Length: 470
Image (cartoon, rainbow, N blue to C red; front, side, top):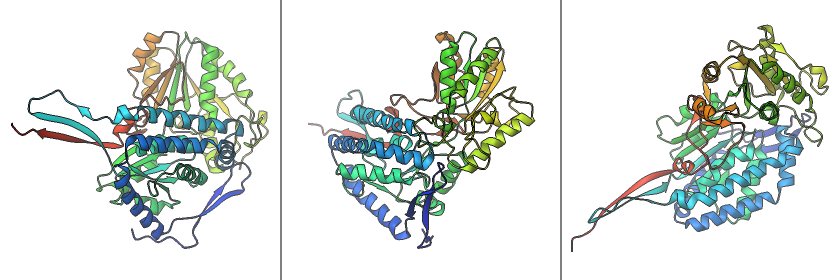
């Protein structure tokens, strides 16, 4: 590492709520980075020898400590990234669910694999920790995305260095406080505030054994490029353009409520949020009419007001990107069903953006091919299961897909044809920690959560023992 940041370089977080600066933090110096790596490597050599029962106890105490600050944390989330305060508490509920589940299954998941008895030999395979894991977390679900890797990495005997988004830096501090309150040995979990250059150089460090990145496709390419030639393990959760298919036999009340929530929750800023909806022609118009009613029930406004159900996007540039998707679709023949005037808080030049429902869309429009990451529901009419599956697969992404129908057997048959990591029937936009979370194509590679999630954070070590003849 040769780059030395300006001594006065700082990280500033601007709130989308009112454009105020809510956090100012100095960036890590070169000396900070080197010291952090050394502590991580030294502490990991001791941590890996700590009994799993103790590692579980530390992680449990840390989650308990984090939850004691949930009201403060919810407020900070709303200030930093704009999620309505009425929903911000739900993030820590998800953190608790995922963390406690991974703690509950780690004994079985990390148990050595024993082989059939072979006379004169003992053979087994251990799950060895990788070493130091570098976690790069995003702003949209700042605690959930981080905890997916942090808790299982620590349980598996790794040390962790967290680099959080510059939009949500307080999350790394709160996690650090929680682990410190739990009494975790110094150096096992650490965080750094880094610029892009130092992040890339840390990825390339020979003192890092695994990198977990959640973010954009371009960010994933940066990680792969920085790690090239260093033979790190890499886990990438990247973008999504997640589709839903509404079959003719679907329960429309349930489908509309679920899909609109899946598309608009968190302002549509979710990698597994619904961005494309394919609706059978026989129920298309009814679905659209009900969807309009559902969308008009949302209230756009300050994320700090409890009445708000749709907050601002993370920044004005993000809102402008979504506006461009909508405008291009309309210019190419799409029909917009929501008047921006129905949402008075929506204003050009700000991150406050009205939700939109589009029909008459095609795959020649960016809104159906690029990740929009905003409060837009784009609906396309289809005439058969075959057409729906072909359109759902017509994407460079493959994170999740959903089918709404009363015919579960047929849904499963269709789901087996979809190129995605998670397939839902009659639900969407949810991570069950007992299931593997993975993407295909440009949605990433690797796996988080479930028993399989521990495999990406460990390496197999085979023991082949021949006993002396008596």
